[in-house]
Structure formats: structure tokens, C-alpha cells
Image (cartoon, one colour):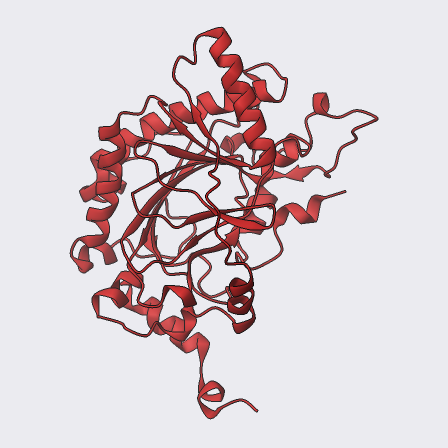
Length: 363
């Protein structure tokens, strides 16, 4: 029989009370919270399963050195490494990618400054309005999820035009504008490499708009007093084309590989790359989008900045399926055609707990 405490528990009320503070998870940490609120605690069956799958390994996600990429023989080696990593892991890290270390450091520092500034300045950006290009909140699916995650987020929708600097928080404006310039360029390079890895012309994916339409999300994970009970980001796969992620020195990102969680250890100056669901569909399963998560931690803050490439805005109302050159009688299409707008909306309007959008389109 349920205890009186659990019968009296009003989850919706607690969620609203947390949301109304507009202080996010950092507000709880700053208040000296020792026992995390119930809205953050994972279900008992999930925690029990975690105990059974707690085996750790020292195998690392592939690391790919992009230096000398213009040399034809070296480029072929890089393309092969990208193809193998994308097919077997769906994740890899790149080093010597051309983004100055100072630009990476200043981006991380800008996110830290935004989150650690006076609360009233942060609250000016607090919103759950999906149409806002710049907004701050905690958990985009707060009211739809089974449990809330231990993180706060500043979202910047860049899409296809240069962002208006005046819309951005002043404390991280300059560093973000500079970072966007470089991360877009790296995204274009990686889309070229992935095209070649699929045996296509280098400009194939770029010509259909895959290197456009990026959104930058700045996650801030405060130290958690009970990290074993919650997560920083629940288990999910990214819906778009490609994700490029910058992270500070605190670990937490894990990728699911052969039914085991592997740590993606931060590399100074490195950028993490992962394949999105939509690219898995376009490649007809030659490139794999895999599940990943972020654990909570006793130490913090962990800071990460994923940049999601989801396609040019002009693609939203077009239908896409596996690229014709990658299908044959022996290897028929594995997915129905997808309307990109519908696909992304399905992801954004639901919870990370729900059935992945890609599953709706499998043949």
C-alpha cells in the first residue's frame, strides 16, 4: 500500500514551484540543497537496472586528428576513420580541427559567466516559449518527463542567418558570436567528410542543406548532492543531422555501445561529434545515431555546448528518405520518407523518455 507521503505528493505542483523560481537547478545548489527534490529522482526500476549495468571499461571513443586534411592521402585516411567511427560508434572526438583554444575556452567561460551572474539578469531570459530565439530554462520537457534532469540551459537558435548580437546575453555575447563562426566552419568540413565516407561526392550532403540550420545549446550542470539518484541528461539520441559538442574538463557524457555505457572523456581542445537520427535515415543505416546521456556529479559545474545541425530552414517542408545512391535491390530503403518539420516537432513536443522519432519511420 502506498505511504501517506507518496499519496500526498503532487508532482505537478512541485514542478510548477520549481519552474516559477526561474532560478533553475543552480538555485537549488545555491540554497544548499542536501536532498534533491523528488521531481529529479529516477524511478526505482531504473536505479535497480543501473546497478546491474555499472561495469566500467577503459575503452575510449575514437579520436580523429584532422591535421593535414588538405593532403589527399591524409584526407583519405581521415575519411576512413570517420566512416568506421560513425558506423561502429556513432560518436568520435576531433582534435587539430582549426578552432583556436582561446575561442573554445572563452565559449566555456561565457556560459559559466551567464549562469553565475546575478539571478535577476538571468531571469530576464527565462522562458518556455518555443518561438524565442534566445531563452534560458531548466529541462525543455520539464512537464512531460518522468523525472527532471540536473541541469540548466541557455538555448540560442542560430538557424541560417547570423544571429542578432543584441538578442544575446551581454555577458557571453562576444565569445558566442566568435564560437558560432568557427563551429559552423567545422560543421561544414565534417559534413564533407561524411559525404565522402558514404562514397558520395564531398558536396553531396552540403548541397541538400545538411551543413545549415544550427542551434547552440549551453548546458550548465551544478554539483549534485545525490548524483546516484538522478541524471544530467537522460538517455536519448539526437534527432537532427549532426551534433558538435564542446565540454569542459568535468566528465559525465556517456555513449551506449554494445549495450554498455562508455565515458567520453574530455580532451583539452577536443570537440565531440555524433551522428543524428536524420543522418542515419539519409545514410540508410550506414551511419549510426546512438543513445547517450550525461551523469550527475558530486563536483561541478560541468559545462557543455552542443551545436545541433538540423538542416537549412528551406528543407523543413521537404520529404526525405534514404539517399538513392545508397540503396539497391540488395539493400532497399529501411525508412519511409520523412517530413523534416514533422520529425523535429515530434522530438521537441515530447519527452526524452518517449519512443524515439526514428522508430516511427522504420520499414
